Image 1 (cartoon, rainbow, N blue to C red):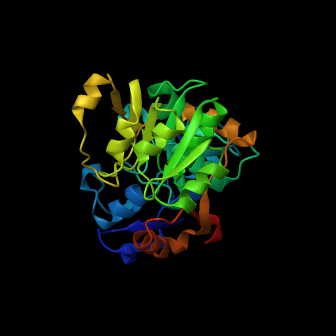
Image 2: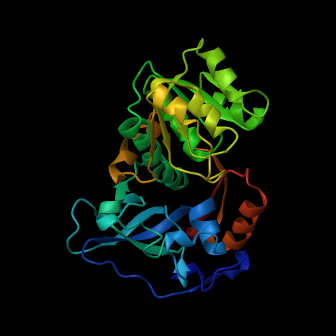
Image 3: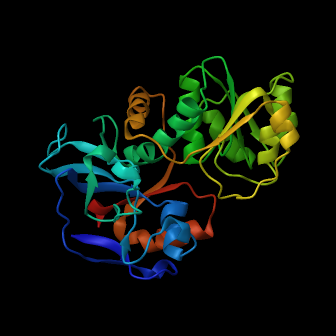
Amino acid sequence: MRAMIFNAFGPPDVLHYEDVPDPAPGPGDLLIEVHAVSVNRVLDVDIRAGRAPHYGVEPPHILGVDPSGVVIDVGSDVQGFAAGDRVSVTMGMPGGGRYGLECNGGDAQLTIAPAASCVKVRDEIGFADATVISRHGPVAYNLLFNMGKLEAGQTVLIMGAAGNLGSIGIQLAKAAGATVIAAAGSRARADVGASLGADHTVDYNAVNLKDAVMDITDGAGVDLFYDNIANPDICPLGIESLKVLGRMVTAGSHGGPVVPVDFSTVYHKQLTIMGNPRSKAQDALPCFDAAAAGNLKVVIDRVVPLSAAPEMHALIEADPGIGKVILDPTLG
């Protein structure tokens, strides 16, 4: 098979599209023909550049944490999957490992993944959409519902309205009956949140975020603050926007990571601040159901051949605002 591999950390041109041996599934694995895998800003671009040593990835390595495709073969102990199934791989692996980090990932024509990390994809959902949903949907679902305990009738402030975690969070929260305030750093990006169903939007570079939220909520504040950016200027205003017994959830910090927090607010309002980038594979299923019902749409900038990965890494480094880029190994 062919794979995009890097043998040393460095600029995008350390990535090479080359022939490597076909992988063979272990007893609990699936062998998958990859049809889509995303270029993740941190888990692909930063790791390849050597800017994320804390993930423990060492070259040679094949990146790609979220492939979707068709099962070609199954291991001897696998139950519930068969050749021909359409599947997505989620990051969590048995024993606490992370697919694409502690093992080679999906930037290849073929990949192996533990069956326990995989979920079946409904026929109504294309592979590119499935990759975005399986990467961000379970994390968003976990943040909103398992951790954030969001319920119908409550109000949630969601940052990064035009990003994948933010845009999926908006739609899942709306489908659950919550009131959604979507925030972003420009009017155009905030308007993406409106197009996805947000009840209110805020351009936090044009107005004070806390003031805007308090105006929207008639001074009550929000039940849940959902952030994955950790902007040191804006995140504290989101925390200040919480009502008494409010909760903050987060799964990212690329805009920080250090954020000043007024802890008198935290203890006087009895706030809870929780972080967790992980998720359960099965949490992808309600996200697929929402997509099939037309209640969840993903934001994809472009789909390109896997061979274009070096150019896409360079593009993402040059343009922090670019949307999700999908690599398709079946295109070359």
